[in-house]
Length: 372
Ligand SMILES: [Fe+2]
Image (cartoon, rainbow, N blue to C red; front, side, top):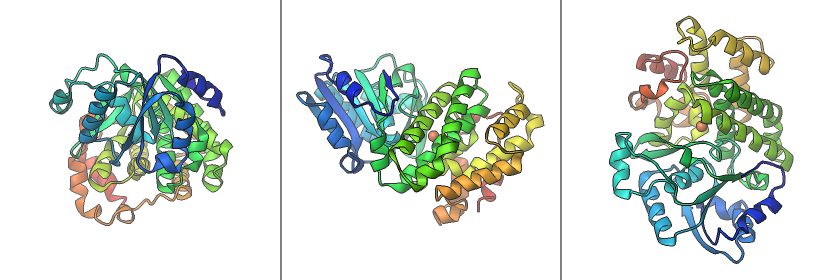
């Protein structure tokens, strides 16, 4: 069930009241769960139910916390898992519901042979950031050490999702909210350029971009319920788009920034976003030609009411400024410029296969140098 209206409380109550959902395991963020009003909402929804609360401690979805959560699920045996939080909470809960062989996870994820063939129980995702779209995607991110893996399966997608904008606007972690908002924009744009994009994903991208572009400024200034709702909807559509198309180079390069330096996901994506859009544009003639890359850029320009690549670059700068995202990596973390090779060496170039133009390590290095 997808509850994407402004007001979902009545429908949510009905869903939770189902007699099938007697035991409910809740996964939330360590601090955000109480501060944002999620605890209050869950109390309302789970009256007369047996519940178990797991609060995520680590900033990113990582293997040892995942194993801990899987053990709790096996012990408690819920009929429903509620993941209520940002992208990391949703990813952790989504994977924990699908991976049962604890001993097999590390070796099999590493050699890409873990087969997901079922899920433990139903799961509902209620996002507390407007950005990742993780409530509707068929994949989830997992870190083993500093290495990022994408766990993909139709079982990963939550059975149910609900937008509940009060939680987004009560989320006081400005850095996370702003980083997530950029993720929403980046995903919608990257999806448009992915070699796996199709008519449907482009339609979702356009819906997401339209909602984002018309509302992000006022969302930043005044986190009203209405703007929180519209940004949540933009995020929902960006999730729908990348579920089909996956993301391209800026996402692929973002992960070492997160795993080695703790940069929030959307912020990390923003670092090379402009650089790669320019790189792809400058290399249109070398594009892989699954679609007309020039036409795709024209479509984006028209849609964002801009004329050319320079104006696109200005537009990206404007969005980053509004979201208080720095463009120079030394301002994000002064240690990053000294460790650029570490970033480049830890980008999996094979994961860039959806990018419309081939990207080599030297290209990544050139793009990163421009952010120093
Ligand atoms: Fe993302």
